[in-house]
Length: 173
Figure 1 (cartoon, one colour):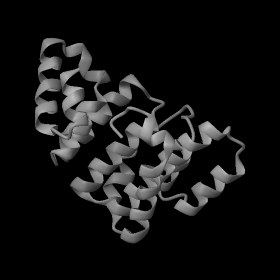
Figure 2 (spheres, one colour):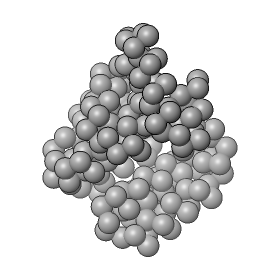
Figure 3 (cartoon, one colour):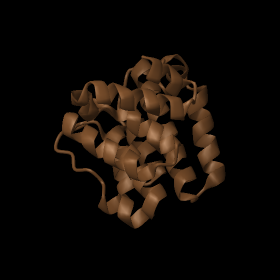
Figure 4 (cartoon, one colour):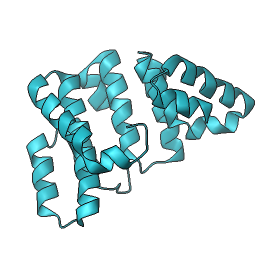
């Protein structure tokens, strides 16, 4: 819990130390510990971050958000080609919009196509806010990461920050 509190405060070195100690005390927790990957990422230890997200994939092979973080880690470490080659494989569907976002990171969809897919689906209002939060967040991160469109990245990230779901979710985001 202390590691999570420190992660949420942006104290990534402290959270990493807490998470690593927790895993030393109970090594079985390593496989389920995606938050350690986040700490490694923000400490610019991209190799360890990518490895931690790969380990977590053994625990939850449905969560494409984890695969996106692994992509981001590999991109920072070695560039777009290696990141796309290293994308994790998923056999089951994930919650919207992650299947579409994953396709964008893979190079098969554009951001505009993702938002068109969301528009074409009939989500309840509350759930659509959730879907739009995640879509805006990760489209913004993708555009910032790749440097394709910094101005657009800021616009998408601003929409994620302004989203009611994002403001009330209580997660690290």
